[in-house]
Length: 113
Length: 113
Image 1: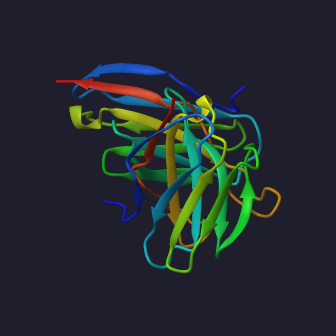
Image 2: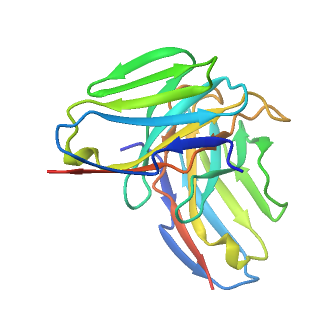
Image 3: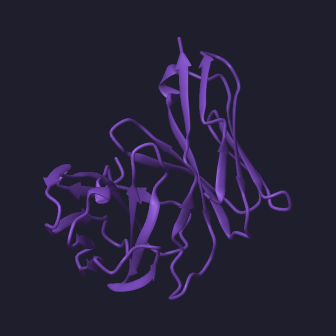
């Protein structure tokens, strides 16, 4: 039990739609990172938020955006969904960006048809 | 080209065997993580290393900074160790200061009774 919950667990969307994925972290976890994991691949870093500000970004287009809230929850928003966006989306939280231990959620499996 | 390479990609062994999973990375890093992912997506953080060796129960992780190489060892392996083991490196600040991880593709480990 990591104390990080993601919702929904599964989601089906069609191409062109928009989606919002949610992550609820432990109290005191000021850092949250989002990752995309395609089938059979390792996760890819999307972006990180620290104290409600974007703290860095991986190689993802602007249609991937996020928010972090004071209550240690966060969102990943994806606009204009493409078929290749089908993947498992993971969030990971920690009190500080350089903390040793990361706490991962179980992920949201997104399918884009 | 994935800059974090793991070997082997797949490993099947008998219960009780000593297991070694290798990870090589190509750039200077500030830390290396070993993670365990079970079917369904949940990821558990096992170790973070910046030098030397760490041990937790039957798991041992080592890192050689000069050779840019890390290993994860499992002693007295058990069927419950069956999972995907992923190494991920942390390259320090990127742009605004994020410490997003760069993941390997994972090693699929099956321990047979």
